[in-house]
Image (tube, rainbow, N blue to C red; front, top):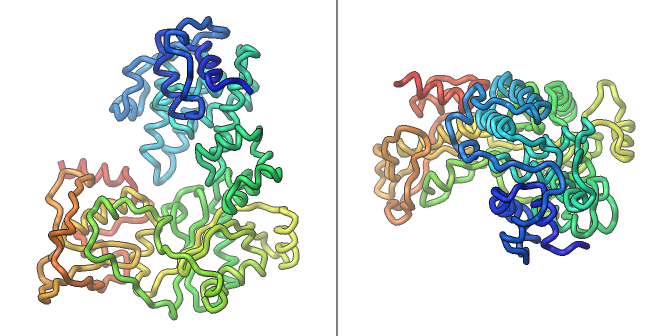
Length: 489
């Protein structure tokens, strides 16, 4: 194996002296196992390029958060050397803009990458060249590498001396695309000799993975595909036919926001026997501790193996759907939440065929999350699990400012020990121009008392209490909040 400094030396051969220090620093952050490079910057600067030189990116293109980056049009004239990559990114940006609940951050990331690639006077053809594009995230880097692979353009013009280390970068990027495998794990796998995602099924690499990572690796090809609305509806119909009749079932997440596709299937269940509503923490947390809570952290808690036989949710949802050939594998299970892999059921498919299909890994597999909400929490659970994250943050900070607390279980008001529940006793955030106002820790200033769950059983009732009109699920996003903010000016 080549020395730790080889990676930096080989990559530097593709980069002119003026930008080597910055690019090596970028690589050091991504591949710290090679960061202890014995070569000095002057040595790096003296390496003769072996391939088409990489030109330093203009500093104006690398500034984060620039208004120009998120604009609709590109302000940079393309050199033509990366036009095929740029056109691919423009097409994906157009598709994102057409989504009913488009992700403005994602659109901005596409625009930044397009502007940056347009400014280069060399062609990007390798993983190492893509990684050093400062400001371009790993998601877009992987898109570029995959696109070059599919077009047969990957590695064109790269010398044999640089291919080995570049292939390691390429493999690490691919491994980090497997759900649950992070940078450190991917790096260790590459150093152990893993050369493809398929290699993860080999015993020597299986031993390096956690149980959830092994599941993700097994279904990696399926999990890279988005979930169509038809697939979500097929699972919903199956649950409606096979769960006991007293369960109510709704699709949430991106599906409820009218997205054409979703990253996973998200289901909300409620049952008349499930009524326990946990209280929020005491004293109430500051906005910095709860405003950014992800839906993946809702309804927390694990379910011990010894408690599963007596848990109705586990028996009905998990065991019941395993025996009926819907659930292929379980990643996590709690008292109120399940996450794992399901096989998309086909219409009129017999049970034995579904079960055998899972055994032989035939069919289509997708990630699914199931949440069980108490009866009194249906409205708040729908809000929490529909999203999106920017809209939820807006609601939670709005609740905080009027002395309330909003979580997946309901809208709460703090009652002090002296019985006063008229004015809020929790610290209230000052008025701010946007939803990103935060508070310092206030634990010492919170008066002792308890939370009271307000009678807000529906989404509409919660929004009314927060002084808001009804917002349809498909409009709950950053674009709506931005439009609303502009209308006030």
